[in-house]
Length: 377
Image (cartoon, rainbow, N blue to C red; front, side, top):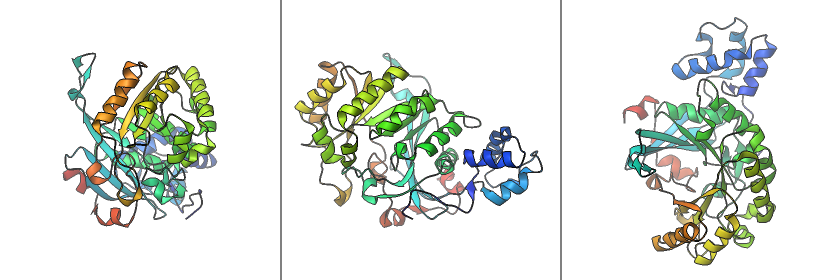
């Protein structure tokens, strides 16, 4: 399984393009698609030929070419604080990807100095590929190499699985893979997520990229309103190339020009992800370089503590004093809104940069015989 094309005997019912095409060939209106999806979501054990009130021509088509779910939850792991659940999802072709549910209590934060309303909300971190070809040296997923792209249906199915465990309010494409290297499936999956019956707001969806310039240029047209996060991780091209080999193909100057144009077109803030690597990119000089690079942008910089990944990396985590100093320079000198990411799920290798499927991750998780096992734990 080395090619980027994912061939399957059955397609996911959530593969919107395929489903629309096949329905039209059979003379069935595509307007039935949201109804079919709603039935599948509400009745996990239902068969496609049991969905009521469809045109008769739809049934043989659905049962011969589609499955309600082509993937399954192979195993799951809860963090010790019960706020994070890592799902190991098995695809129809046998490949494994990871998705992570992160739960937050909005009442613990403040907005404009006042307690925030609401309660628990859940964010789902989804994967877009099996493995990743970007090869970032601080990321466990990169050690897998690239295996294959997910179909749009396989991406949406991660949301379906997660929604049966916890109501999902936000989706972030920060799992395995580079989302913009699977552009067609990404766009189609997000269109499904923002339409009926899911109805997620584009403002609640964030796509993270290392900076695939040609894809960023058309993102605002194909996916208006969603959030863009850029994995910058270094303020100069030389350091970026050292820790992110793919950066050679996307020079920093060209990337920043592209982001400037993107912001002009969207009038939206851009989220900048910056992993803190001790002695590599966390010095005061680097903070000033980053501040000057971003001072003409409307951005939020998210400083990310480096997560240890065993023997896969030569890096170590920046201490709190360095992170605090870095943040103060960006805020105080350049007026850039800067946050420090609260890491979740480190004890189950579910935090940023830790997603990797290997033999140990399969052996050390709890196998499920039924999805209900997750809901009652």
